[in-house]
Length: 279
Image 1 (tube, rainbow, N blue to C red):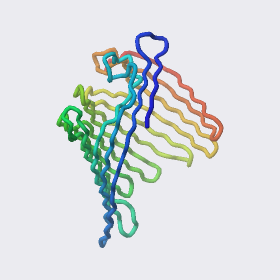
Image 2 (cartoon, rainbow, N blue to C red):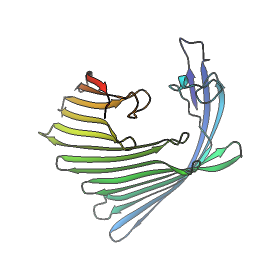
Image 3 (cartoon, rainbow, N blue to C red):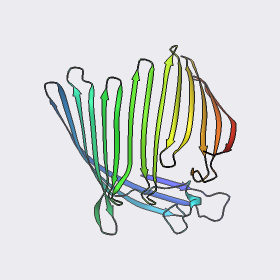
Image 4 (spheres, rainbow, N blue to C red):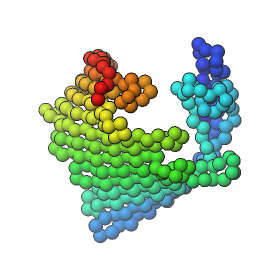
């Protein structure tokens, strides 16, 4: 059972909201394991059914009544829906070391449509990850049947050997309502030294606008009883958009964090500069 109360203070434009719902969830699954000469295969088949009912809904709620405006967006309430999910989760293990080699998950969800009084295909999620001696390679994909297109694609590559590491990320998102697309490529590299010290560099690049959104240098000290972290970030900031022709600007900020473990944490940030974006 979920209950939410929202009180809109310092304004007479909106009526305080009360929202309550209950959910009943039933799930079934089975695990199958079969050994082979050089590997072990495990397979889990599952299904779940969710029944959701709203028993109280009053006041102004974002995206759920006529008074809904962007002013209410900081206070969203996600309405649960009746749905059925079918899932498959399988893994392959090295028979000698019992280390996982590959993991694959696929889930198909069906949501109840109040208009047609039937369950319709909603999303298909497919996840796969490959493990190797020095890291992993993974990919997640979500397909939406309403817009008949991929709404999310996320790929990662991780490498870690001795004291050095490299992480690569690719992210694609498509908004279900506006169909706007967002593509980003991120990478992070660095190394550990002197046991308690780490130095890394991170960059985020917008593949749609062809502009670097942020650059970050991170220096971390992690002793047994205390830790200190210095982060220098050069980022592109805008109120509504980061398009080149907009009023976006670049700012440089230095973050300092001191952590006396089991006692307290001190955080401080200093804005070093701010300028209009000309690149």
